[in-house]
Length: 112
Length: 112
Image 1 (cartoon, each protein chain N blue to C red):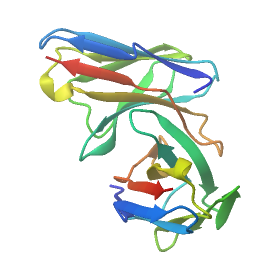
Image 2: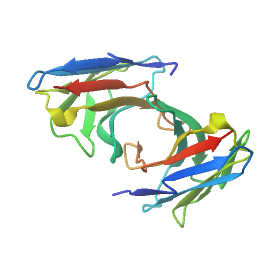
Image 3: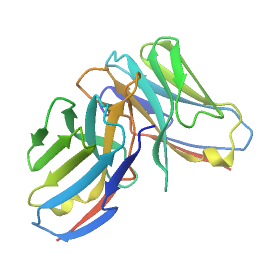
Image 4: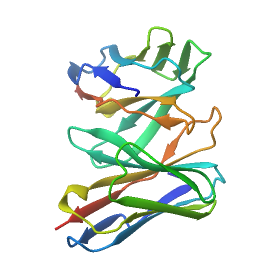
């Protein structure tokens, strides 16, 4: 979507390696979110940020960490990737008012 | 914890039919409710956002209603077309971080 980009779009990594996914926005929105989408589970919240350096855990945060050093960037790190973290990861932004969410195009991560 | 249920899980209809997709949620203390569509292998596209003070919202052939007190929202699709084939997701916005909670979606197939 315009205003939000995720990188990389696809990644294959080995079990035990660290992985960082990047979400970049140009909308200057306050809130940023990381979700994962898996068959049978739908979209689940991993972590979110409500400002620079302000982050909190979501429903499925174990094994993940995040950082937000600038308004426009929100990084998701898998400290030591496991096969259970194979998923499609979506970043989303919101300005916290009545505009609603905008989602990125997603990152397909495969852990082998 | 917010829980979202979407009925039916799947729907197959001939072109031209009017459709009703149902969404129910357990926590009525929502800010907004957003409907999305997702095409296979793609990201989420926002269709409609209903503010908690609104009863309905319309965009073209789509109309979404919200009954916050009973925890229900309905998406009406008029004169369905094959291009409407996708998964439709309902997501109420709750909590201090205004996070979205997703249902499992309704997979719609419109046959030519």
